[in-house]
Structure formats: structure tokens, C-alpha cells
Amino acid sequence: MFVNDYVNQLLKSKKRFEDDPDNFKVARWVTDGEGAILHMLGAAHTPQASVEVGTANGWSACWLASSEHSVYTFDTADRPKVYTDSGFENFQRLIRFQPRELLKEDLDKLKELDKKLYFIDGDHTSKGVKANWRLVQPYLKPKDIVVFHDATTEEGVVHFWLKLQETRASDFHFQTFKTERGIGVLRLK
Ligand SMILES: C[S@@+](CC[C@H](N)C(=O)[O-])C[C@H]1O[C@@H](n2cnc3c(N)ncnc32)[C@H](O)[C@@H]1O
Image 1 (cartoon, rainbow, N blue to C red):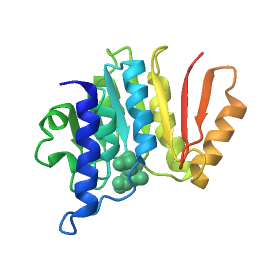
Image 2: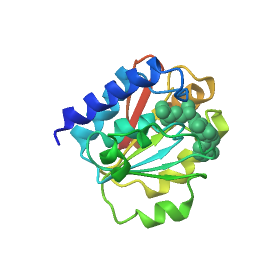
Image 3: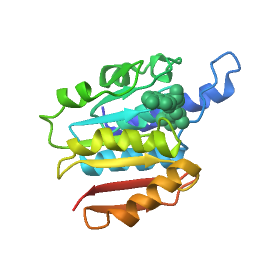
């Protein structure tokens, strides 16, 4: 299957969810533009796996998986998942969901992988996003990237993201995509 087929499948599915009042409502999706950025980051960066905090209905997990790598995704709430929709077999194969917080043990299991994409979109308070960052940071390898959603719009994330850029400029490269909600990306220098 070509990468574009995955993306087409996602956009068709989104339309179906929007049009069908009987379907569950998928809350807080990344927008199409932001999903496309997740897809492009995956396609350009070719991670061996993504680790996502904040699955919600699995929409961003699908965008991550659309560049054909495994996605380990964690959420304290277990909501219906968009990728259980018919025709999403490829996404079901790639996405592994755990209904709980991301733990150190999960990162220990993945530490042999040298190129990962972390997507942080869970607890949006400054304290919450910092806790996720503190968990992930010791595991970072030179080829990893960390992506934060809502980096320009959610107060707690904005505060965290600005502060990190101020205090860690010598350790990391930072890039901020000015999308609808803002996507922050960092990697080790
Ligand atoms: C904004 S939604 C995620 C949206 C999803 N990434 C998407 O774009 O399709 C945030 C999710 O984070 C979850 N969450 C909150 N605190 C969390 C934590 N400590 N660990 C994992 N998930 C958490 C919430 O239950 C919620 O489903």
C-alpha cells in the first residue's frame, strides 16, 4: 500500500465520522493540516516507532501510523477508536494502545530503538506536560524527535514550551510550526 492510500483512507474516514450522526464524536482531533505535519515528520524522519501520550480516539495515532511505522499510544481514558473502523486493518496492525499513563517500563522496552518520534498530547497543564517531558528526556537519543501538540495555544503547554526554549537552547534544536493549535518539535543538538 502506498503512503497516500493511508492518508486518503484517513480523510475519507473523517468525512464519514462527520457525516454520520450515529458514529461516536471524535473529540479534539489534530486538524488535517496538523495531521499532515505528523505524516510528513514520519515520512521524512522514518522513525522505527512513535510513542504517543494522549490517544483520545486514535486520530493522531492514525496520522502517525500513516507513514507506516508502529505507534505505541497511551491514554488514561479508554475511548472508542477511529481505527477500529472497517477498512483500517493496516492501522490496527500498526497501532498498539494501552489504557494508562506512559511509564518508564514502556520506555525501557523501546530503548534499543535508535530513532523514535515522541508525540506529547496528554495532560496539557504545565505540570502535566513537564512530567511527560521529564519521563521521556533521559531516554532521548541523537536521532529521536519530540513533538508537542498545542504548543502555541494551550496555556500550560505554551508556558512549558517557551520556558524550555529559554533554558535549554544549548542542548536542543527547537522548531515551532504555527498551525491552528501549534506544533513544537525538538531534537538533541
Ligand atoms: C487532546 S486529547 C488527545 C488528542 C489526540 N492526540 C488526537 O489528536 O487525536 C488529550 C488526551 O490525553 C489524555 N490524558 C490526559 N492525561 C493523561 C496522562 N497523564 N497520560 C495519558 N493520557 C492522558 C486524555 O484522556 C485525552 O484523551
